Image 1 (cartoon, helix red, strand yellow):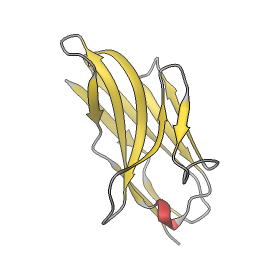
Image 2: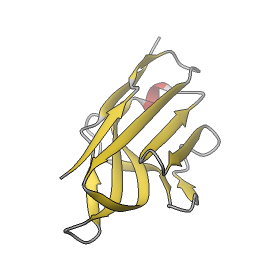
Image 3: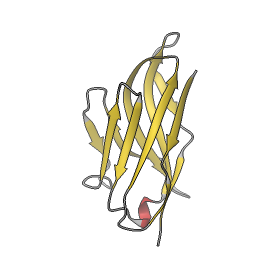
Amino acid sequence: QVQLVESGGGLVQPGGSLIISCAVSGRIFRIYDMGWYRQAPGKQRELVARITRGGNTNYADSAKGRFTISRDNAKNTVYLQMNSLKPEDTAVYYCEIEASTKSSPMRDYWGQGTQVTVSS
């Protein structure tokens, strides 16, 4: 089994910063890409940022210049540093990984989500 546990969400004022993290555990053989997605009420889940095992990144236009995704391969953890937060960033943020285990080929795994609320 593979578990993804997100942490670090919460309430922050507009213009503030927040860092969320996602720790992966279980019978992992290799983690490939890791990413963050978000889903606001009444909207579809959307990509925020992704990072390859080698550190290449891509961002949604809404995240460019404000958010930074990073990963620690030794700790099987991915982070999302969010700066200059806006009310429209309010959403549940989900961690997603592509990983293989000792008994199964590469597939997607998702975390349970962490709420980020930007409000004064």
